[in-house]
Structures are given as C-alpha cells and as structure tokens.
Length: 111
Length: 113
Image (cartoon, rainbow over all chains, first blue to last red):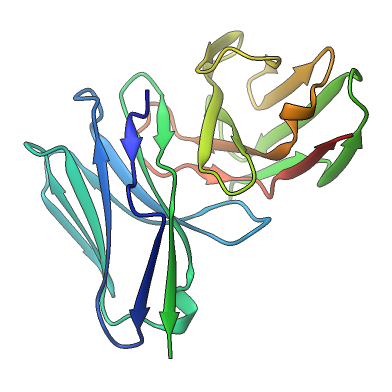
C-alpha cells in the first residue's frame, strides 16, 4: 500500500520555465509534508516543508502547495535552472514518528 | 551542530552471510531514527523507525531487523543475506516529535553476490 505517491517518474523542463512536481497521499493522519532533492549515491537533502495547517510555503524559487481536501501537494520551482536537475522526493510524516517517501520524480532542466 | 555517521560506504557480501550496518547521530538527544532502502531505480522504502531506545517499528516484513541499543545509535542487521537485499541503505534522524525535516547519512551501497 503506497501511502505517498508520485505518479510522474520523470519531468523535463526548459531552463527559465516553471517545474511542477506533484505528490498524492492517502493517510489522513499525515500532518507534515516535505520535499527532498537527491543525487545518485548520496543521501537526500531537505528542500522545503509545509505543515497541514497551511496551504502554501515559499522559500526563494521553491514553493510548496498543500490541498488537504484532495490529499495533494505540489512543488513549484521558478525559474528552473540546470542545477535543479535531480530526483525529487515528497515525504509525509505523522505524530507517531513515521516518515514515508514517495517513489521520486526525476527532473531534467534543459538549457 | 548535529551530524549523522553511517558506515560502511560500500559493502559486498555473499548470499547467506550476516549483515550489520551502523548509524550514529551526534549533537542531539532522543532523536527519531530511520532506516530506508533504495533499490535500483526505485523510491525510498521505509524499513524501520524508532522514537526511543528499544522502540522499533517495522514497516515491511523482510529478512532484516533493527536495534537501538543507545539513544543515538541505530543498527540494521540480517542473519542471512539474500540477493534481493542488495540496494542503497540510508539512515536518517529527525527531532522528536516529528515536525521538522529529517537529515540523512551518506548511505551504504550493499551488493549481495
């Protein structure tokens, strides 16, 4: 049972345009959501997070949107840069300590 | 500042051999600790998490076990490795309770031959 789903395994975007990465979850007990960036053979690095009491959080070029009723969150990167090319994971946690990741979306930003 | 150490970085083990991967965290107390596995081309699968000494939650029944003998030490073990245990293993920690980001170690590439 995949509690956190990223249905797009890959995304290709032109430099300077917006990248939109999507994530869906099924467990209504999740109350904190995070996005991570990962390069091969390295541990993921934290990008941005959002609490379930908010619907938007912005940090520089990165914005995360949360739609609780749809159990959906998205990460917007504007403008996209070639250095943003990596695998992006969304994750969700509950108060019990569980932290579940999606399958990842590989973003490729082309010059 | 907090740091997380995970070793070894790479490991090649024969089928049927035992496994012990160790993870330690410095600079924090009572962290949540996690073990994840990333199989080739796949996502991050949560294997075990722990919210305190001796408290282990298993997400996926399999050939592995975890232990937390000390507050900031998390060990992943197997008595007999299978070929399917190959993958990239990641340890992580977060503040307890979880309302903040988790920080990851550099990972262990395990190849079972």
